Amino acid sequence: MPQGDKRAYTAKQIRKARDIEQSYEERGVSEKESERRAWATVNKQDGGGLKARKRARIATATGASARTGSNANATATRTSTGVPARASATARAPRSS
Image (cartoon, rainbow, N blue to C red; front, side, top):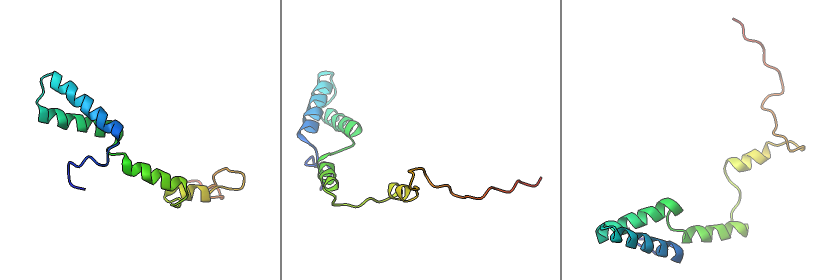
């Protein structure tokens, strides 16, 4: 996707950017600067275009991807009681001074 392409944004994000841009223009900011600030604001608030993330969320909900990362490891280290397993069962030897 070329730089500046807005296809990844939802209709709500586009409306939000348009309203922010109009607000800046009413305050006397140039049209080009108003557009830049509006999209920067939308990106800051929403984290960028959401369309691709919505598709990823649907795929995850249907079980299309497996658990990865530290969360998968955390569940593997739990005991049958649901309490995290201790790293070492033996007591430490006191330090010599």
